[in-house]
Image: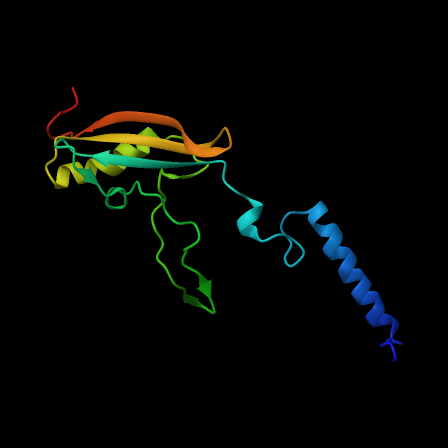
Length: 155
């Protein structure tokens, strides 16, 4: 049985260099394709924040209609080959991964909905999920009321 052997030193050098870079690159940098781990595992979020919004009757409203829904970060519109790709560009949301609480932005997003639908107020419950004692659970909760400025004018 004859072993395959290349007499071309360039090929041997390339294979050895590629193997060395593949082994060493993850130790030196986190993102340098194809020498790194998949990006979906490189920057995992520590927390994510969602909002639950209900009206005066207790009816829960869709947070995406109010602009406070959690956007999927893996479905952005792509610009490729000079054209728009799939998906749609959603407006930035106060809900998300590793974001700080932004009560002012939440109120600004909900206020137009309250005016349009003649609702007196909305109860907003912010939930922040994270890992606690080895399990994903709600680690922080905030609740507040957003009042319709037509029903409760500023003094």
